[in-house]
Image (tube, rainbow over all chains, first blue to last red; front, top):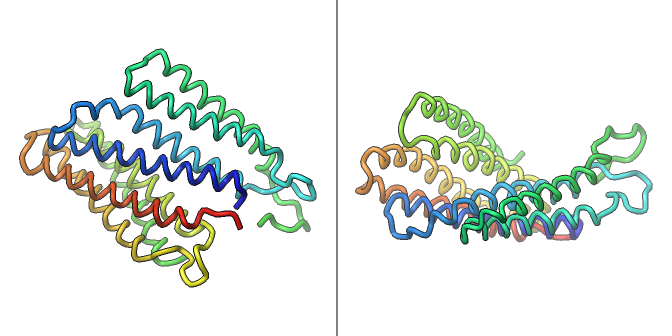
Length: 141
Length: 131
């Protein structure tokens, strides 16, 4: 597994644990109210799990698994857009967390913009790797 | 496909159907079902399917234990689904009569699901590595 994928997948696992922690606090508070501040975690809970876990995991695994360019110096294409996508998606999720916790409504647009930029960069990287296998060429491993 | 992976994926498919049933009931006005619908879908279906495929596809932990600890994965499977099903029962009941036993059932549900997530993260983390 390439280093970029290792970093993205490990970050996604940390997001999973964080999102589950927020969710557990919210659900427990729903059942037996003990932490009124828990509702401020709801926007972060959703962003952490949707963007931080699911989407980042897909990016990390996609970078690893998608067909590679045959005979190229960089068989997975240029890595910098995916590095940038990983950085932007994590920045967007952290900003979304702050928006929810501190009630910074103005920051929501910036958080979405960061996440959107990450999506565009990853899509641009992955587009060319979504292709049929070339007959007679070895399969990507 | 290893047996444990089949259990994860088939259960995820069942949760997918249950989620859509909850969605129909929610649309018909049953109280307290919106979060149940959403979490059966996102946790029971999407996350559990991801867990199953990750269990199958991530790099081998060791030759002897390619998927890490299968025992932890089975425990996690039980905790996740018990927690979700408990939530599905307790959330509408608690919405109708807040507090009391159904409230504590939600606390237990939260704990079970959190433990399941933590076990998955622990088991998967060790398999995420460069060659």
